[in-house]
Image (tube, rainbow, N blue to C red; front, side, top):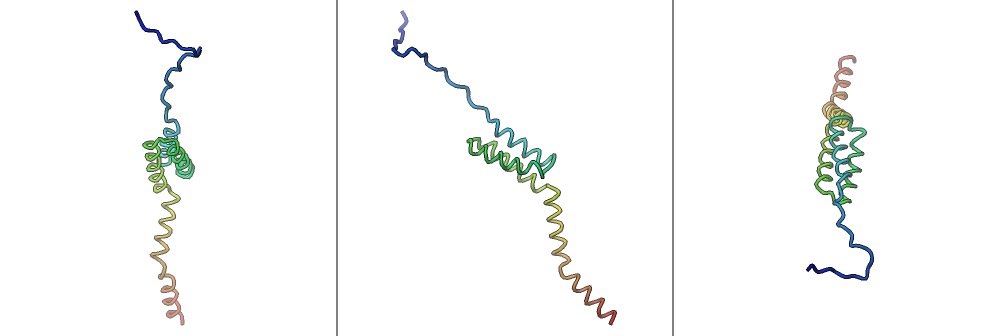
Length: 109
């Protein structure tokens, strides 16, 4: 004979729930990857926001991966590279203009 568990509770015991799928983490990683391959101007902020949301939802591996991909996407964004190039150009040529003016003024007067 089998033992049957008797209970006064008419509701059956719930079955275990399926594990949650890390959808936000997948979106964060795809936005981080898109910030490298497509457009960093659009996908860098999206990747950053979704990576933070993924970290708050305890999807640590995908959240940190998305943060790293977003950082690489930001570094390779043409706007950021142009900014770095302009800063390097202005730093390199900082004293050249004044030296040129001194040279021209000596030659003209």
